Image (cartoon, rainbow, N blue to C red; front, side):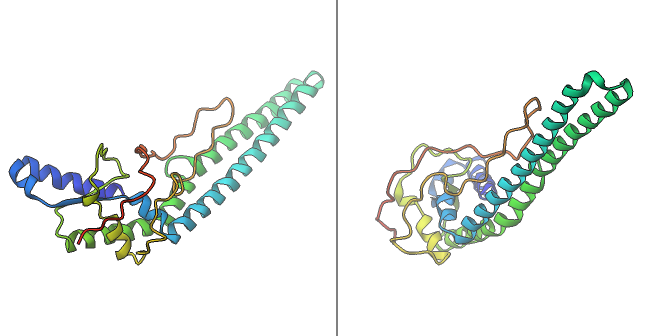
Length: 226
């Protein structure tokens, strides 16, 4: 929900820096928990499951290639004493090329803007856009000048439940149900983890992961705004 955070930060800066603190204090504001909302969307959960499956399969491919590389190296060590210089050079080049191919494949899959990054964008962006549209509708209906994201980059040390509009966004998305709208377990909607780089190689640069916020209370207050 970075787009939402940037939008709210820009609005807040405009209110405080240009229009003055008195005007900013007069504005009505609220916040939502986008992580909680996303955890309630079946499309998002399905997308995360698909990403986890793809990541696992790609990682297995890398492990298989690393085993093949290890076999090449062990065979070379066992036969080195009987090889000519020309044969040694050929085998060494073969091992080096295999190492480079594995690293290139890993970067192509798990690196910045690699296949996993692109697949994540393809699967999750439509769902995130749908949530943003619902947030925007709720903000307009409730005449809110500012809407923060509790689970985003903005650190909220204290939040008064009276300003929590998460349930209204869930209603806008057609998910208003008391038995379903309970806080999800932490980590349920986290993106897939990037596998570690092969031994002896530098870690692959991956997509930045937003900083996690303190865990939410075990139960959401039942009080609702009118």
